[in-house]
Figure 1 (cartoon, rainbow, N blue to C red):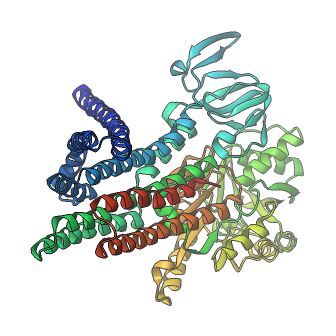
Figure 2 (cartoon, helix red, strand yellow):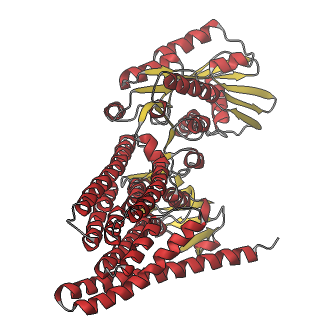
Figure 3 (cartoon, one colour):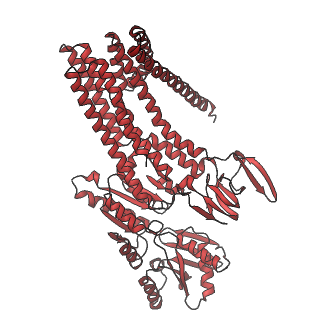
Amino acid sequence: MNNSPQISSEHSKRSFHEIEERFFSILDAVLIGGTLIALAISFFLHEQVANTILMILTAVGLIPVAVSAGRALISRKLSVDLLAVIALVFSLISREWFSAGFITLMLAFARLFERITEARANKTIESLMKYHVENVRIQTGETIREVHISEVKKGDHVIVESGDRMPVDGTVVSGTAEINESSLTGESELVPKKSGDQVYTATINESGSIVVRADKLGADTTLARMISLVDEASRQKNDAERAADRFTQWYIGLSLVAAGSMYLLGVTPRNILSVLLVVCADDIAVAVPLAFTAAISRAAKRGVIVKGSKAFEQMSRLKYILTDKTGTLTRGKPKVIEIKAYSPWSTEQVIERFGMSASESHHMVSRAILEYMAEHHLSIHAPHESTEIPGQGIVFSHDDQKMFLGRLSFMELQGRPVNDLIKKDVAAEKDAGRGIVVLAIDNEIAGLLSYRDEIRPRVKEIIAETKELGVLEWHMLTGDNERAAAPVVRELGINDFHANMTPETKVAFIKEFEQKKRAHSRRAHQQVVGYIGDGVNDAGALALVDVSIAMGGVGADAAIEAADITIMKDQLSRLPEVMRLSQRVITIMRQNFGIWAITNIIGLGLVAFGVIGPAGAATYNFLTDFLPIGNALRAGRK
């Protein structure tokens, strides 16, 4: 099927839009400059010359406003521009050239700030895009050649020297290096990389030399996905923005009805014009999306991807946090403590099978087993067949042996007999707060492996910070047993824990938890429940809650796709930061509505008491427009 006509059509539309944007940008620059000059002439030189210039500029200024208002009407919407068109026409009819000049100036500045709103999002995107690498060096055997990035294919070996930016997402196959991942994570701390480690596009090799196997290219890389998400998030509207749009529709309708009623009651066109000039709500139309765009850009610079302003709105009301343990509260890198073998199997045989089970698994415990094997310089044999059952264990085979690795409950479920000695050993390890996996060969328990995962630094303080910011309860949902989970909860000050949970039981628990919390609240929409997980095993849980947060999302596709908020590096300290930013942007939005209401009341009062006429009203509206817009820009500052 030939898609060239469709591609050509889309390209033509984009080109026309770019030409139109460029034309109106130039026009607005001319209007702003010309109007300021005309107003200066009016004040200091010749009023008649100024009036002629203002009349011409007003007529020209009607073009973009009328186009925008017409498009809105075609879409069956009332826009602020319709109110502005009426005000401009009234000004021309009334020969209020000074008022017409200020309206033109006000509208041109409003359009300018709308472009700033879009430009702020684009600026973040452009700052990410600048990290793209053009030329790379490919190693094929002993041959090294330089090629354009577009020629690189999956599986190619790319050479990255000290000072180079990473051109692909990939796996280190040789060499060592220290990598600066701040472009993705917001943290400048160098990360050591060796053979087998993952590296990501746009990060910098600060020292060392490595060869990287290209795993992801172009649009599939973590950087490209970040760019796409930031772009998409900046264009989404949340409930607050949609409410602001609905408010604007009603507000404009009421303003027009009020103007018509005033005319029928005999109010002079001059006073009607003054009222219309005061109540133009172009500042709110720009300030609300600008605040959210600034906040999204601010978060992206800190290595946090927020999928739209709705996520900010939910985070600002977060009351309950449900969290996974491994990889969230703990480092997610368990360390093997002890391996036991049961007769007739020797320790060497059991260790070999443990390594075999881990060779094709991505589970944290499997990685710990592989590290143990590497530290002890033990060889790893691949199984003939291997199947991983999420939340349970691994079924694998080698030669004529069928083996199982997992929890004790998994063994019992598979019908493997467990004697009292093994149960005693398992209980002793659990009492010590260690995690347990057992190995069964054919129909017998052959070995036991215990491991421990370290708690992340400052987690207790971070949990306390979130409670100061409004969180009422923390609940830990973990696949570990009660004995392993209880010490973590006691140490961190978490309200409650729920152990031995599978991905399915987590989903069931979350549904029940949300219903319970909302059933006893008069303001159910404010009982916001959040979940923190790794975005892979917890995809179901992440999809259920009001706001989902994925930890350690660098390179994790499932994390980036499933969560509302992705913390690109596994730093829980970003959580209270995002909560503060969310509360700040919602506060700013409310402040802006307050500013708009107060300035309108004052302006209408000045008109009603005859203090200002059309010229004064236009000047007043122009000057007060900067208050909510300036306030909105605070959302992007530290």
